[in-house]
Image (cartoon, rainbow, N blue to C red; front, side):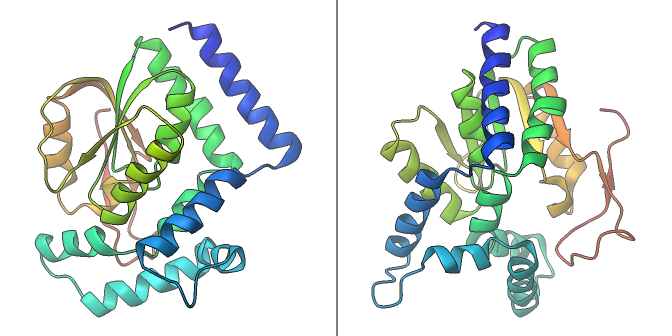
Length: 235
């Protein structure tokens, strides 16, 4: 894999976004089809206007708050149940990852580490909507997408088949991590875990390079009830 080729592909994608503010319309349209089929929404299907509302951070967080406090998880098992089944972050995660901030994170935080360590095989741990995994796949990396959320897993099975994308998919609730990787990306994940160090210790046996974003969450600054505080001391 040529590093210069990776750089050029990234520059082209970022330039396209900056010049035209293009969000991947094909992907969004397919996500709407998938969502309506998944929940059998025949009489009252979701439209692009609904998706605009669901993808707004403010509205989706309100829905998450309601779901979180309805379930009111007290144990790790109950918390896992919430993340296994909640649908409310699906479109927010998909569309927010098309934002310029996430292109910047890819270009400034992720790609430099991957190139520096000559990484080829990558595990996207807790990959959400799968947009980062798809971007890295386009750049030429060998990607495994992993999640606990059922709708995200089924979405990735659907879209990779639809678009003939070669990404492996791993259900973290049903399967243990067996293989090793050149790098594991842990982006916007640790704040959702009550035991982040346990997870990091396990992932550290599966890759030499752990890319963790962000590297800390301070509960004083973070008002989300489903988030836990953490700080990575030795990255």
